[in-house]
Length: 244
Image (tube, rainbow, N blue to C red):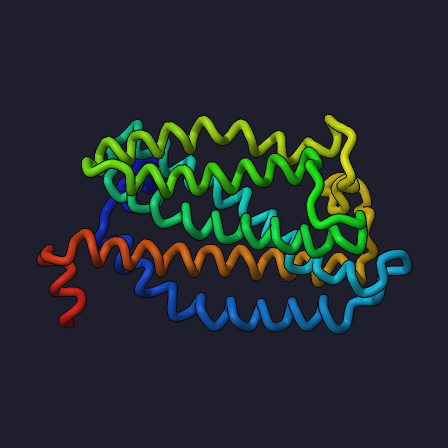
């Protein structure tokens, strides 16, 4: 465990890792997004109740799933920053925040678009919708805290604490449809027992979730690489890396 943290705490190692992975991940992500979206939006069968309006699920659900996972990544970086004082963890936390906020915004916007024909309203203060909005504000709060302090060490510590405190919202999002009366239907994808969604609709949805995870990873690496370039612009290892 310590060896892994030590490797990912090394700016030269992480920069090299991003340099090697990005050229492979970029085309794979593009292909996954094209195939998944075409499969779900064009070839999946029409729902017998919602018609074609349900197809926004292939954007809405992957964005929501990845926005939750992205928060755990940001919070873990915050934990590493607090415990081991690794500066790269601060950069990772800062790199993840705007990407997670963007995915959460996509989930909220597509949810509103889906809600209009389904619920008859663009927005309702449903338990899951409200907790997802809180998630968006937590991401924005981390971004704002980084900019609010001139002392970036204090800023990173404040962001780490906010990230860790905010993790209590994640299980609330997951379980909101079970704990409170909610307009949202229960989870359609189940890891134990049969899923409530037919395989012809499930497989393209799973494909899009994988594609969105790949997109998050790609954006995270690009953002982190840019942060490293800015932070270590005068370092010998970076100058040598760029010029060779």
